[in-house]
Length: 255
Image 1 (cartoon, rainbow, N blue to C red):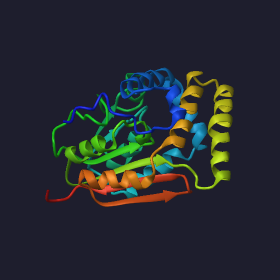
Image 2 (cartoon, rainbow, N blue to C red):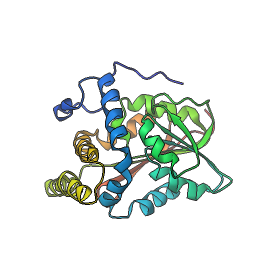
Image 3 (tube, rainbow, N blue to C red):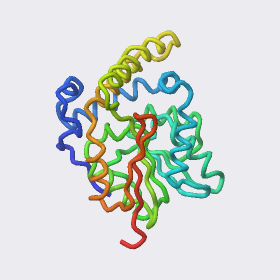
């Protein structure tokens, strides 16, 4: 298990994020508080954001990345369990599912709907032995990770030979018009609908932070290179609807 670098620079160096944190330690503390405070209203707001399409897309992405019945799965940055729930449907009763997240508030919400093993930890320091799982998933959280290299190194370590990973992420639209529309939707329409639906008021701040991290996220090429450097093979990036990316890779059968 790798110890996270507490003094590492955050992945995103955009000045826009300096209002949230100025150091890696501050990032960990502030984002944990933010996710804890918004946990109770997260699912409702996410459903508004995705217009009800989230479950279908997550299950489809997991399946086309190689997740099948009976596998042992680790869902990293599991949050309230939106990806984990779809993974559970796929692996069935003979599979095993573990959900990892640094936010106790998010894990509390997850345990209300899923009877799975939960682990309070960061992606950069996974408290599991080597060669332990068949599949590692992560949904829309890579931009909150402090070190790509450490996170992917940990994914590779806990995967069994031949195991796969699928990292789902939202990317900036390439066109200026697309970016404007996404900004209006995430920072304007979603918070408004969340208030109408009486979501936890802290959710609005979380969605504002989401938009800023999307704006400041690293380029896909860097993510792919970090996966290759960690030791993954058959590394690919699949794009859906111009904004949803799935980064996939496989641990070599022979190291």
